[in-house]
Length: 83
Image (cartoon, rainbow, N blue to C red):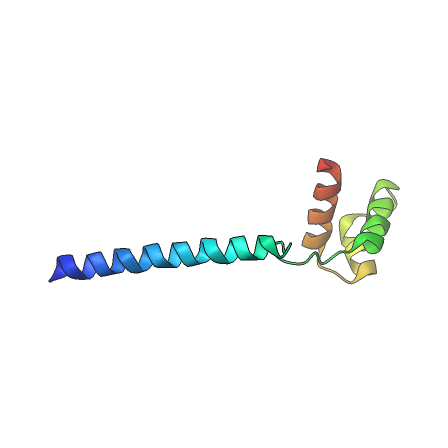
């Protein structure tokens, strides 16, 4: 009895993985990218980068100016330094 339930659970898991892969492939075919949309677009992002590189504002001041969390500023600044 327990063996039968484990076989069904394993089969269900395999179906879930297969459907996920099919959905991702269909999304790629429609030129869709996964993940969250960026909170900081190009223009405010460039402004934040300029303020940070000017050494006149720290990250907390930049986040207060742009009214976004300071974590978002850090993510953007890290993205720019990697690129």
